[in-house]
Length: 243
Image 1 (tube, helix red, strand yellow):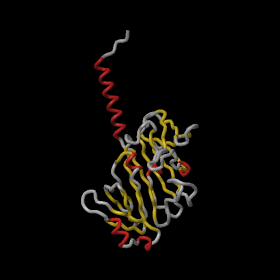
Image 2 (cartoon, helix red, strand yellow):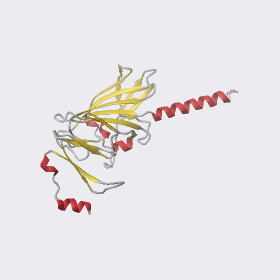
Image 3 (cartoon, rainbow, N blue to C red):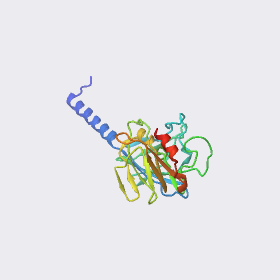
Image 4 (cartoon, helix red, strand yellow):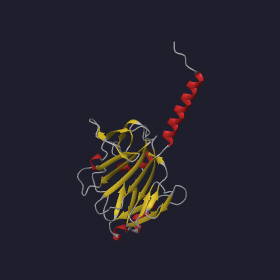
């Protein structure tokens, strides 16, 4: 017979629940440096809350609008993972190339993750991630390009606080309104991974926003282009879109 102290058991369960809640409440922080528009290299830096022991990080595979497991994993390069300033060895899953396994040392609470995303220089197939998303004058940021997250968590449960650094003077638009701007960096609100992936950001040297409706829930068309002349929209087209 095994005797269990009910009060001790209750305290243990409360502690476990509190710990799990704390982990769930801690967002991943993401910094994207999108200033290298000449080479089309975008730099991602994440701080990922984890636990000591075996951890599997996942790169988003199923992307809204794609209807297929085709996240652009081939453009992820130069992956580095650290904990407490110490570089950690990682290995690719033998059956699923979207998964990365790493051993977090005792006392480790976060992973410092860095990698680069390479915008293709030209179209090589259908689908997002297989066409250029950077030119010398504009950039389309799809946030699924820049995220690694603990595999056991759902896209709705993972929260991310993202910041994006853009070329100086560029304007932007997104479904997510920045909480603040500091120089060339915009800070987005903390949202779920699902919401972040579903909220791409467009930015460019040549930018125009055209309001369509006013008031609560107002709509607009925002245009980024490679040349100023490409921003032109005729009155006929604009009136038709507003009708």
